[in-house]
Image 1 (tube, rainbow, N blue to C red):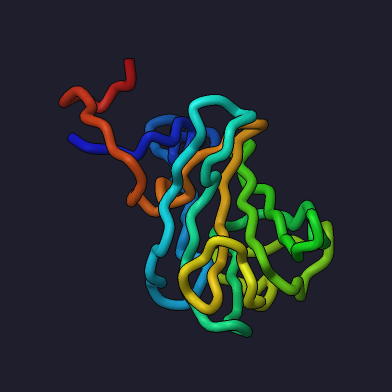
Image 2 (cartoon, helix red, strand yellow):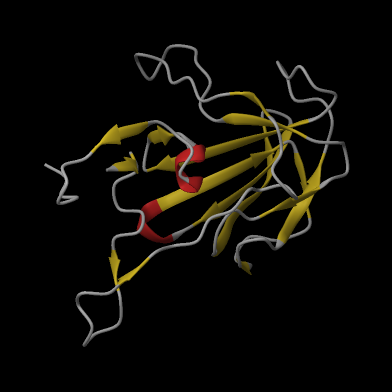
Length: 164
């Protein structure tokens, strides 16, 4: 059995009275279709060292950027001179999108697939003319956003599916 290495995603209990059912949060690509991944998640060995704390997805400038999952916009503004949108999700997850000209404001509830901005050209280190840098965090820990789609690193689980 194989599963993504993102504890807590897909493990939220369903409504009271049905403890055996699970609600699986739905996440999707933050760009229309299935964009090419031009740079993968490459976390540094120590938090203060350089690394790539997200994935870069190729697309054209002006492409709509979509919320990867249901949540609430927690930031829409500039970080180090680059436009960024952050969405808070269940289980303490936060997705970030840059460089994105926001079309939402802080506090806006969003559903998976709803436009939150438009991609701008000029992401540093991107081999394509325009790239979306898509990040994922839980607290101060950076995670691979592709794990939200079941495409990140995998690990083998026991046949009973229990994490030990």
